[in-house]
Each structure stands twice: as C-alpha cells, then as structure tokens.
Image (cartoon, rainbow, N blue to C red):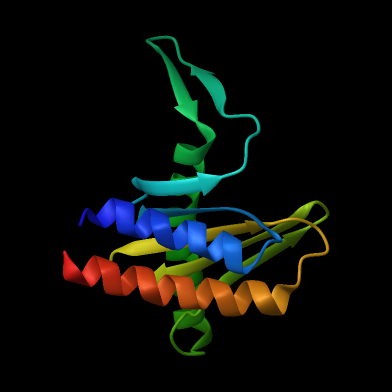
Length: 139
C-alpha cells in the first residue's frame, strides 16, 4: 500500500477516536507536508515579494512551523536535561496545538478547539504518532 495513504488513514482514525480534534497533519522533520486532515476553513494566503507572488497554503505554513517547533523543543529538552521530547503542547484562547515526533523523520501536529479534553488529546496523539512511525518504518 501507499505510505501516504496509510498515514492519512491514521489521521482520519485519530479524529474519529477523539472528536474534539479539529485537524491533524504529518510532515517531515524538515517541514515538507506529507498528508493532512484538516477541517474546512481559510485555506490560502498570498505572500508577495518584489520578485514573485507565491500562493502558500496554510497547511504548508503549518508544516514548516511544525518543523521549527520540533527543533526548538528538542533543543529546549536537551538544554534543560529533561530527557527525550515526548510532545510540545501550545494552549491558546481559541484552542490547542500539539506536536509529536513520529519516528526519526516525521512529525504529527494535532489541532483541537477550546475546551478539548487534553488528556485524551495527548493519549490519542501519542498513539497516532507511534502508529505513523511504524508505517514510515515500513517504507
């Protein structure tokens, strides 16, 4: 089977297991989008430079930021000497974002709305990241 298809299926299963999750995406550790399962909403924004005008999707931006966040989070856990990074959780007024390493080459980002059960988010996010890592290990 196609690895992207299998990884995407895990994102769908994740949202089925935790209905408070509003979206999820998987990207490489260098920020390249692999697959996404996000709810409908604003999809694109336009970035303009003096040389060219490029349309960048919000999922691509999220993938790039996920990569940077993973790198910074790993540096912080190393600096604080608190062991291997398990997750990075950002809570804000309108919801939550959690990032999980999914093996050595992928990152899972999970989005949830305000009032989400963070315990369930963390448990299901970690399980999905482990399953995605196993899928990536097959390829």
